[in-house]
Image (cartoon, rainbow, N blue to C red; front, top):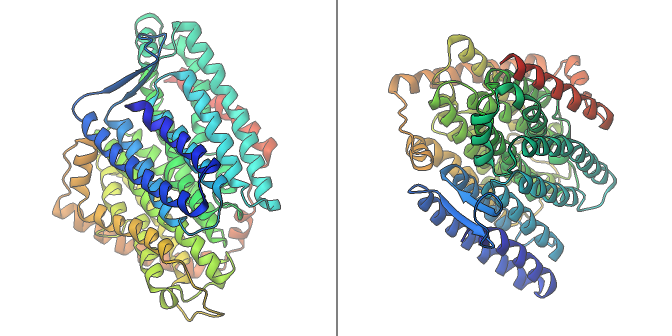
Length: 526
């Protein structure tokens, strides 16, 4: 059955493009998306009992193409299909044409393929497909800025994937196989850690770029914040696409388990988290604020994944889900706000809550989610990430959360005040899509422990004292965040200099080489 998750979206996209009318095509697309979510949930329930395996073409063993799903991959597939369903609801009445739906289904198919396959070369092929499809979607409206951003995204990823290909070839030379699990077993039994350092560094530098870790982050604001990409594309890039890098980081970490570079990636996650929110605070473009906070939140996730406590690691995985909901909701709502006000400048938008109450309420719930407010999902996942932290690490995590709060104090100024200009009618379907994600931010907070156990099978409990401690920390951070924004960020000349920081293509390529060398050194010293 696993092959259908990859084949059906492709065939449907081709069918819609060639044969259906626009209205009929959108209805069929919605129905199939709903069906994919249902089957993803069914696959998730099966994976909790045993690993589900499909052998493609009848070629068993390491020579065949094997699709395999366990609980981790099933969770990512469920998240992917659900987010594409929400994006379909949002885009239902949008006149994007058949080509848009074809690209969306190809994108979904390739992402699901990454989560299903354990073949190292198949991952390479699917990453290439995703890169090309996303580049076209970024350039979808063909304005000059989007064309530039799409080309930069494409070229940077083409350079980075070559490192992955070198690493895959090296693994094949050492093991004679491309299956991750078999290759990992051969590496453990027949090759010392020193022999694995070079392929590990090749592969991990590509994954670091896919995760937008510092300093390999500059492609992300170009891709996520570009003016011409449809809002649904920006939401999926942040909510789902970048999570494929996190998934591959986990899988290749399992394969190269002889190399312990967790401390290095934890430090890199901290640097990414702090650098991301500093860059976000300096922006006035609402999509760029959100884009740089994707960098920051991925840094937080990477920090949690590399902490030694399994509760912290589970909290990071739960934050993957939470980030998809609140950041997807924020990007979708930003698209509506931009359309209604005709500007992307956060200082020129006022009165969203008064003029569009439904949109404003959904935006508030997403903001409360990302800032870790009480009763919302971000608080739960951040609590579990900090579960095994020492006092120093706990202070760093609080500082990262404070940076997020400062940015969204500025972002939330759009909601208050008196609206100016003419009232623009906003599609109800689009508002409902944003509201769904906002509501999930609340539900994921109230029932956070139950969701963690349901998704990952880990019993977690947030003590009453721990909960009130987090409430107090959030309240203090909110006051501090408001004061920092009011008396520093809004008037700082330094923020204007930070805003101008951007790496061109040449600088990004140099950074890739530098990070490769640093990973080599970190793996050697580990």
